[in-house]
Image 1 (spheres, each protein chain N blue to C red):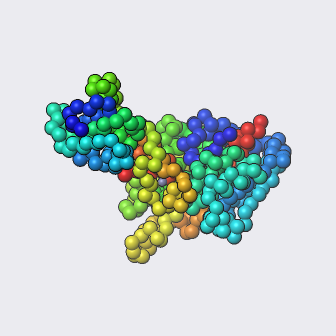
Image 2 (cartoon, helix red, strand yellow):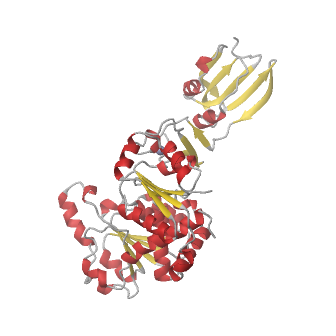
Length: 303
Length: 138
Ligand SMILES: [Zn+2]
């Protein structure tokens, strides 16, 4: 029995296997429709994240399994009283696998140390969110057919956005990746992330100007620039529009660019971009379900 | 107790100067009934200044605490006035309830009786990180 708490829990080979299972599910959904008959997934969300929870639940239903879910009021009362360790011990009596989201960093790890069934971290505060990174990796593989020799632009809040840090760290395992880090001065990538890139012998470039680098990108990963990250409203208003993607800006981009976004977006990608075939953020959301199906299968050791 | 000669006991030597008292407290040597001597700022050829602790009894030492606070330390075991063993300290790979996580968003700040565990993440810089939230230990 094992759990997935951090993307680093998975080797490069295991990620390749999960990606290949996902791609097989996409081609042969019928083959997988009863793989988890009689199995139960418990979704324990101690803070609301409707889209992540629904993605896990849809994944389990498509495998023929069932879902046990706490209501929001139950999760909030539990978070006041019972310890995470006790919750994990009790829920593992009822479920075959647990997906847990919790506002405290490390809570899913504590659950995995006390559970008798596998635990998947569905987000612990701003700390880890391994199924988001797996979703991003599957999307890159489906859009590009490979993980190596890609120029990957990451744009927006690169300082606080852990999704971005985790994706960068996962991509440093592959050959020939060039990172282009696009953000306002205030929201630059922390130095430990840049060190990870350097230690793996890869290149990166930092800029504040999206337009100047857009033509060289194979992938553009957009993130939200949040108002609360700025000291004053003026800076926020000045900066937020320079990182809004519009059809006009995309004229200079490669014809096979892949535009990704973890969603939800606020205004950083204009709705007019949605019809561009290069926009793959809704396909990315769909991939999130497939990779979670693959992960559930692997952790339940279903052949 | 003659500070220079211990009959049956332990000498913790080569402690980084100034760390003797911290080790005394963390190892809870104040709870011992036997004589304990702390020598501060003793001169040392190798280290310039060092602290030394002498314990006039054979006790089990938590080598992890010692290694964490002062990896330069050595432990001499004395029996019948003779040095029978010299133990070298190494930096422990794991610390359990030696230091505490200060991140208020960490599960260890709320979960009942959860041990505070840190793993050694960088030997050169003696960096430890909380296993739950990966915050650097201080
Ligand atoms: Zn912590």
